[in-house]
Image 1 (tube, rainbow, N blue to C red):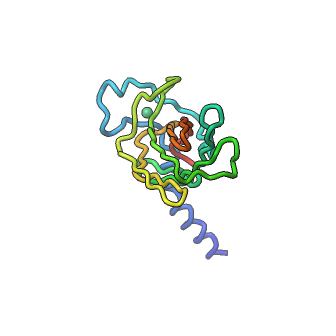
Image 2 (tube, helix red, strand yellow):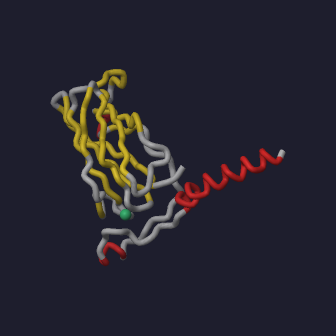
Image 3 (cartoon, rainbow, N blue to C red):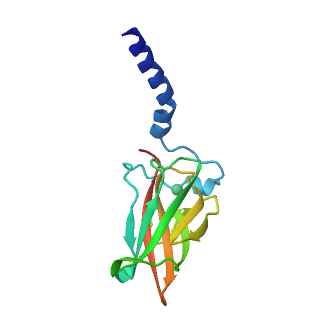
Length: 166
Ligand SMILES: [Cu+2]
């Protein structure tokens, strides 16, 4: 009995820094200038990341194959994407060409108020597009914009990546 209590106490002691990190309220950001500080910080419940999204007119289907849960705050992480024909979702398009842009909207309908402070890179291998260099320096919803070219067609899909929580 005594042993069990001690064990529980150790687990709680171990988990506390992680729980505290998740509960941290938005705070002033390193590396931002004073004009950025006036941007209202959206405090929204943390949702799950978008797992798949179509480009316009369902031309392509993009799948978010891999994303850390939770997405870490102020740490590098990676994503994996896969591209499919939007009208034949079983048909993978390993030769598609992807470019991405990542940023926060802070209420904007289009575009970003700011991007990341890192430069992500994409490596394509056998139909899996691995994005490294992802880094979220601010709490709130981030948008991953994926531009796809392939098969003589092009399109854009959007994913919401919430930062940062369970
Ligand atoms: Cu922001």
